[in-house]
Length: 265
Image (cartoon, rainbow, N blue to C red; front, side, top):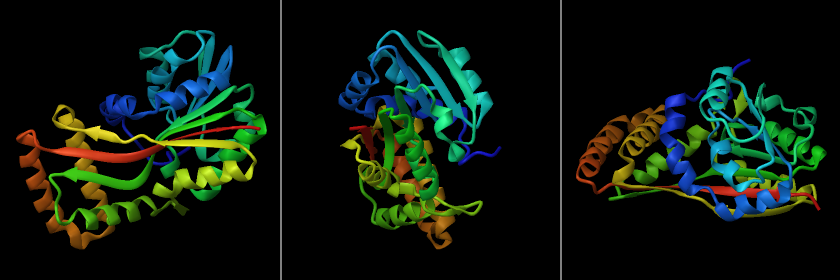
């Protein structure tokens, strides 16, 4: 079994506070009401359990979780270091091959920062599985391809376009959806006759998020250069300028996402 797109536990830990601030509380509360009691939540691409830790306090105390991920080491960390009230089970699975049987008994299906690393066919299969079990779905923090950096840089538009093209790249024969994922999910659920609600959930990062800003910016520029190598010298110069802005406490970054809640008729 291979990863859809590998991520490290360190990166997941670094981004967790920003993720928690950004996710939509109104949609979470609506999802909790739809999940009912007891809530049986199946979380897709769970990693170290960030979504579980964030959402659990908003659910009925009588809750259980099934964490699905390809990486058993990340799942072990989710259970051992961050348990929540009620049962927590893990399922080592290739999320790209998820089937309805994997979601048996779910009263809510969740995922966070997942849709961009799926293909159109993989997302369609996941939506089909969710529709088959009839459980409402909360997909959080899907990137939409827009960032704002202050102070701005004249090359930001080129870096953003290259980064978005990189997100839509072919990996192991798979064409990733990148920032098109959340829009595609909305269409698929609507075509199935489900109700869909969306809201903007941006990361808003400042000097207090220094380590995350640094790692995110490095990754953003590295992906842009991987996609368009001719941007290398401009990216290096931009990185130096942004480092000075960060050190002076001036750097602000907004990374736009959307949360989506879908539920059956």
